[in-house]
Amino acid sequence: MTNPRADYIPIVDRKPLKLPGDAKVAVWVIVNIEEWPIHEPMARTVIPPPQGVTIVPDIPNYGWFDYGQRVGFWRIRDVLDRHGVRASVSLNASVCNTYPRIVDACLESRWELFGHGFVQRALPKEQDERAVIRKTIEVIKEKTGKKPRGWMGPGLHETFDTPDILAEEGIEYVLDWVNDDQPYKMNVKKGSLFSIPYTLELNDIPIYAVQHHRSAELLDRSRDQFDTLYEEGRQTARIMAIAVHPYITGVPHRIGYFSKIFEYIQKHDKVIFMTGSEILDWYKGAAGDNG
Image (cartoon, rainbow, N blue to C red; front, side, top):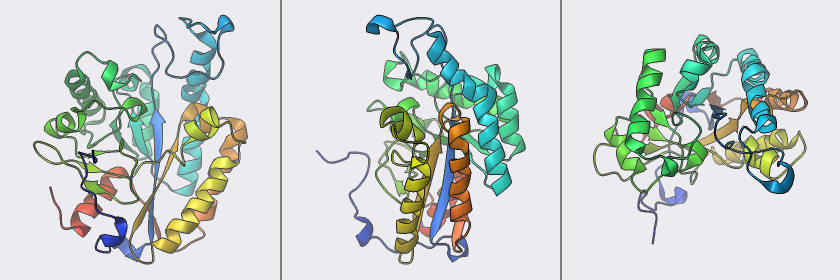
């Protein structure tokens, strides 16, 4: 069975796309800001408990996550502000209530905020996913004054109904389908929904928490990925995503390598940094598809 949400159109068969300023590559940075409820098993763990059982409260793994809110986020923000890069934030909406200082800082840096569930719990585990999606949208809008345009499911997970619900609730783009270097229009029952390229390859969770690479790995991969996309961008636009989490990339032994990613990219011309909504608006105009 082919992908029911996307028509199969190989990138070599598509009409060429041009980015603003005749750029070859659009780079966007996604900072995932989550909340892990302390009264539940942790979303992921860095250290297993003795005997391999599930412990609640899981203090060491909660502390691992909470370091990102207390310290790591501020390092990441400082790096991006120094390089003049506006991030797009994948936000658990509960953070608006529990860590409002972080949300205020994102708004001060003119970052875009989009939905990432209410807390860090996969949608298939929720009793009413529409209610969770709707609550996420409402809480972010109440805090920021803007309805979020984008969505990424916690853990990138969806049910078979999620894209239809997102479109019905007014979400315009989604990141869960990590299957392209360009945006594309998704198949939904009503309205419209677009996929924006996200990444599992330039993502600090697989790199460090799963594959256990050394601290320089995200820098090395980002340079290599950028070089390929930059060359391919001579023919048609490419989108490059870099995804980080405050509790992983925001630690002292990794943050310097994160900064060097932007030092490298900004040595090149014909590169543009964009937010998720900016990518969406550009694509709809360039592809002649306004929904």
